[in-house]
Amino acid sequence: MAVPITPVVPGDVVRLKKPHPCGANEWRIVRVGMDVLLECVGCERKVRLVRYEFDRRFRGFVRRAGSVESPAEE
Image 1 (cartoon, rainbow, N blue to C red):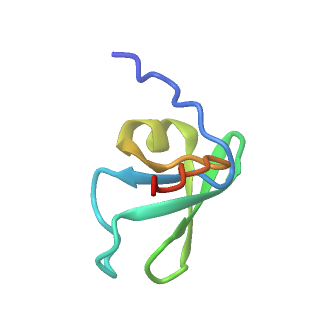
Image 2: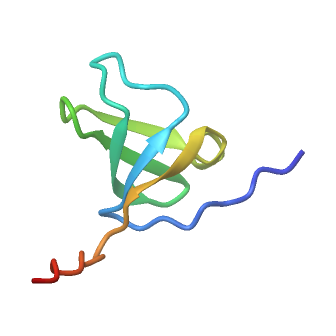
Image 3: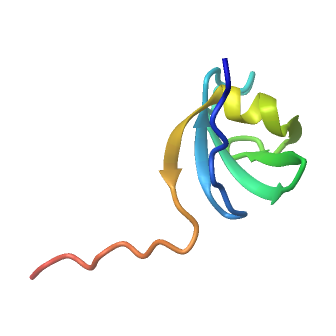
C-alpha cells in the first residue's frame, strides 16, 4: 500500500501518531529532504525521520508556516 507524500515546509508544526516521551505531541519541521528533521515543541529535542516514516506517522497540521491569523473583529 502506497503512503501519500505530505507537502511540508520548514516552520510547519505537525502532529504525529504517538507523542514524544516528554509528553508533547507537536513537532516543528526544521528541514525537509530525503529525511525530515523535526524539533519537539515541548523539550526542543531534534529527531530525524526517513521521509517514508514521517509520511506514515503524520496525523495533521497544527500550524502552517507563514500563516497569518486574522485579527479579532471589534
